[in-house]
Length: 274
Image (cartoon, rainbow, N blue to C red):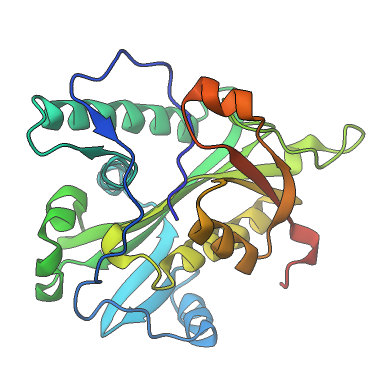
């Protein structure tokens, strides 16, 4: 599921060792399994002015664009928690985690505010749930990704970015629209992640679906996403969402960047139902 994109400037070597998360599935907190049908979610979105709601055992999961900077910061902490794992006895691990989150928070703010000229428009889409007793089995998630909105404590449990741009740093570039067409209608998904406690419960699909709706509002004709070649779950998610294979990263580039090879998947927005 998780799909990180290199959107930060180069950083000095980490103060504490870290490694990519293994793709292990954990049990979802009680009461937080997705139970709503697609039609029910669509009806809820209409009733809430475009905010998709998924019912998970009585807990409403809101899938929407971010509202506050506090929520944005919580989303960044979820990404750091999802994409990196630190050894328990690592010296300075917490300080490095905080520094990494702060760098990404500032970079994400710059992209959204238009300070990075290669990004025409960027939005962060999150899935959030109210903090409740049913979440106590995921104490680490709650403490790391909690934020307050209108006096209510909520937790970011899924997140992604929609980027209207020609290319993403260190990533394969989409070939559509062609050189003789309007390239401003190309966009990419990045930093797609769902809390490990809630993976494979429909939240990833809901996040991508929300991003497709927003992309249509922006006038996007061609939507792209990068996924690691060994991320079978992520590939299945994007295939279910309508994406198809376009190209793949050369082995030498993946070795140079120290990561698994990536596939570039494409979605023809003109064929998506209204």
